[in-house]
Image (cartoon, rainbow over all chains, first blue to last red):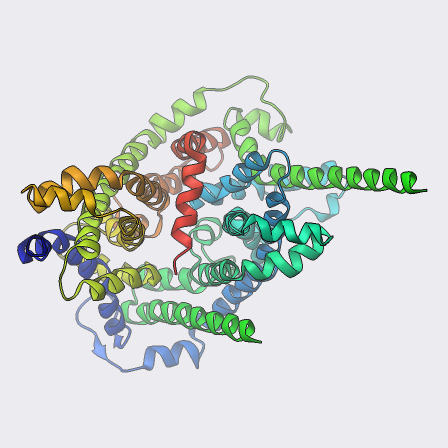
Length: 294
Length: 285
């Protein structure tokens, strides 16, 4: 038996395709990206090695409003954690208490999550349309004509306008994760709380939330890294404009590489995004651990 | 005294309940209404939308918009490309991840643990990192504007999650069946295809749903690697089409509806499976 399960040739045949693909699609490209980021390189010819100069240009000299783009993505991360997640948690807590139509509500809230972000982007573009969009029509109907705006077309409102659909789309996702975690809490714990006369709010605060802390941690990591990497919706809605008002690192990276043909410089933004995501993941995990001990 | 207190409580609860359902209802409305609005304007004419009927029901259902989107807007072509790319991605991901997961979880070799850790770390890598190097690579081997330039990266980035789901599932399958099959003299390949694969079916379903969603909705690779109309998938194609029909809302709406339909149909029939597969994907150690 062990001989069959240790058959080198069979192992090779089973693992080889996955390994080669993983190597070529994920590992090697990352190494190359890291290398490119150290080059002064347009799109033609060979680049010249310049060490960390691209990073210095980005971070210290703040080339192309890089710091503003990072700030935008960090604001989004903050909104996700402090607006999106609490809403998701509240809804998950309500649904898990066993209201009628639990399954219906859960399935409905989840629909925006599975719809393509490109579709959502074009849909919100129509919602924000200044002349015929849903939002301005709604404001007119309730008598708030003075509030009508250009939304994604104006520098002042564009950032808020792209954040709303971003937050809206993934509430259902976090809700679902938290809901599943709440449902997996052993029933007798909840029963005991009920017998002791704890109010629903008290039960939520002192029993349910502490017990689902691991999944809250996962949600925070997803919300933060998802925000830092965000691309599709902003690319479709504004492409980073107007006047870079909605620029985030991903859109800046894309434009730098493919519209301005700066391969080396653009790669340093890509590496920055990866490093930033890893760093935040580690920090969040640490924070949860420290909190868990005290 | 006691009695009146009870009725007061009962009343308070029912008011609370009403508020609760109102809140849930309003929230459901917010999550779903934009899509209903999309379906409505996909059936309207420009005259109607620009004439002030923005949110209401269409006066006449203009199904022609769908024809315009599918044929003139080429959404039909983009749709078929998306179906092809997504289907091949799902099949390849399932096969090669299934084989590797089996070898890693069940077979005995030195580096199985290292290999597993390596694959799982792949879940942390955003596609940003691979975009430019893969673009240069595909340009060099003259494979930009081909289905493979999308399928291979999609499989590569779907594999870590697939591996995670499959290895986890394999751990829960008792070994007796495959052991007796091997003792009966069946080869390891035969055991894999005849014993393991049928048992893996639920996990493969989860993997397929996950892979479907990520491949069907992917934009960044598709936008970068494909510039020829004949290979465009829905996400890139829609950008095109919207640009072409900026002032015609009906066909744009129709295109967006068509692009969403497969996802919604799958969701209607398997909403629990879809939700479960996304939960499984998130709850990693």
